[in-house]
Length: 181
Image (tube, rainbow, N blue to C red; front, side):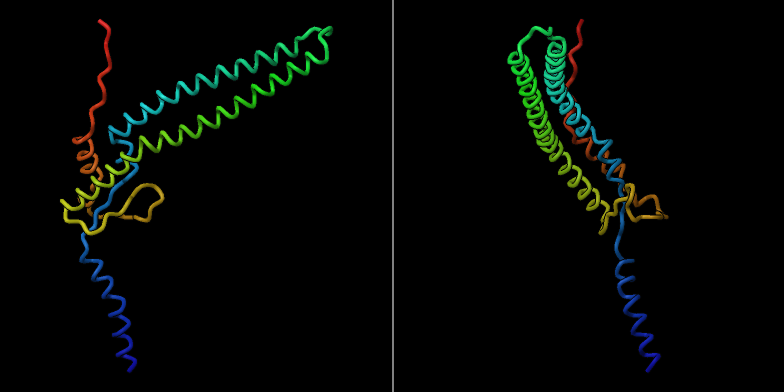
């Protein structure tokens, strides 16, 4: 009876392992794919160009607040208390406006970044699926930092470069910069 229990236990252990061993596995470094995808770089460049204007606006507002604070600190002693309070209230209002604008820009930046990068993520997932299908893979494991894959015996199962190649072949080309002649 003990022998029969051992055989059943071994079968319970081996059957899932044998089923897993029959699976064809590939690995991918999603971070590398993401960083090497040309369209992602174009989208990031577009985002930074747009956010530069927001940064300039905030810098101008901050400079104005600094200027007003300097004016307030350098008011001559003969300026009335009412005028001082009025100037201080103006500074406080400008600071409130600045912080509200900064929050608006931060929210816009998050929204715009998601808007630009969501299609990129979709394309990456689609390319991974295509390469996995082309190679007859049943499972694709992510090897980027922090993931569980500790050892890869066969480097041929790494589909990272194939995915990057597929993505960049179908990528929207970067707009050509105008050159002055």
